[in-house]
Length: 415
Image (cartoon, rainbow, N blue to C red; front, side, top):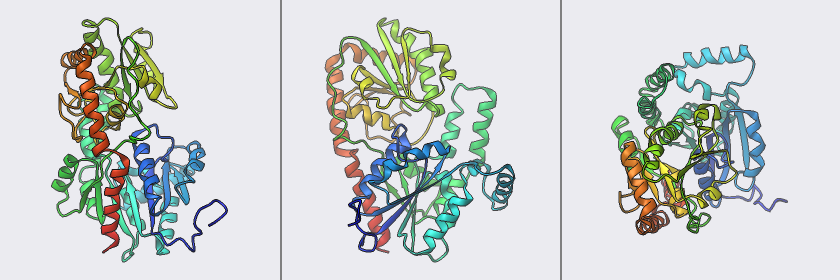
């Protein structure tokens, strides 16, 4: 053992997995980080874990020490870093390599060089790349390398961008989404075939990937929740409070809050005047300033933990109208014993049933009616929360999900 209580590398016979992520696994204030963190800490019980991360700013790197218990080594690079001349040179080289414009911000020559050098040593058994827009880092694995490769799809960027076109946004923003969807066209299908295994978070996304990338090896490793850490909360005190939790820099979450505030909450308050909404999540207050003066909406912003706010809430609402992947916010609310009302798209990919684990409604009036029903029928709310908690314990606990990932590793390393 070394002085930190870890096995000496020379004596550590475990295989090595190198994860490449967008952002660090800490803090766990967004869906991607929650997934990274919970899976990496499980993987670290059986494998040596190295982490390379593409960051938006160097300030994020202050969290690197938090990863020491799980990651033997952490490397990081900031997107769009370097001098203007260097960025221009890299940009043209990026285009000459046939890479799409959409993933240009996520490129890092320095990180790719470090990755190539490390893989070339032959000490990396598995390279796991998170998000399809980082798939170009697969180029760092030389031909003939014994390193096995995994591409983890949190969602499909092309499909996600197209779904966002339905949001009520300005013409320029809509044009940007259309351009992104166009530029990503075929990208994910082409790159899926270059990996030994592709991971998806739902069977729906597995079907989508197989439809565009026939022959690709696809495995399901869903999103999850730490059911041991997140226990059902006591029933909230008197009141009629809703909660929405989500990173508000993600456009579909911002659209959901606007949908709530402009349409759903007024329709609900015509039935239940005392209804209130709490919005928890880092984002852009400027984009929500039209709601800042309303006494029926509390804009919390970033919180160290959303659990106290769940404790004061009666219902979790997820009125998403765009996006992809599966919603960790739904699993979190279910684990905490809060009934959920969601749109069909909001709970897409989760093994939930309307009327059994949650209520599903898609337009503002129906959504408001479903919320009002739960606020007034506490027996129904209790039945949904009990069945939802049983579901997440059985199918969506990170410990069980990690076992699915371990099976993938075992299959790849047995080849």
